[in-house]
Image 1 (tube, helix red, strand yellow):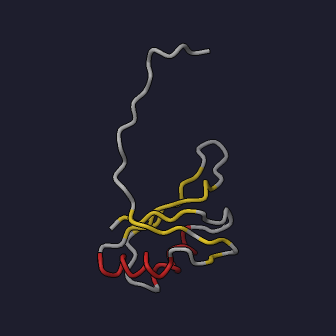
Image 2: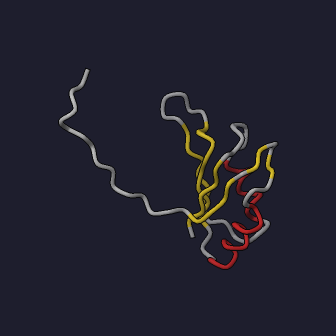
Length: 92
């Protein structure tokens, strides 16, 4: 299951986040989203856990919990939807 994790501290790294989720089961991957220009965290990321039962326990246990001084948001990630671009919009 792919899990969305939001409101992360900008100081937390992928290894720290992995350790938090490993308390609930095996973690397959962790990805904190960063700004492509500055490299700074955008404050959210994704955790992949193959066992859905463990993933649900992690969501229930970690949602609205405090990590590094911030209450994080944890829920099942939604599928990425295709965005529509307005190609008729004038560019300046």
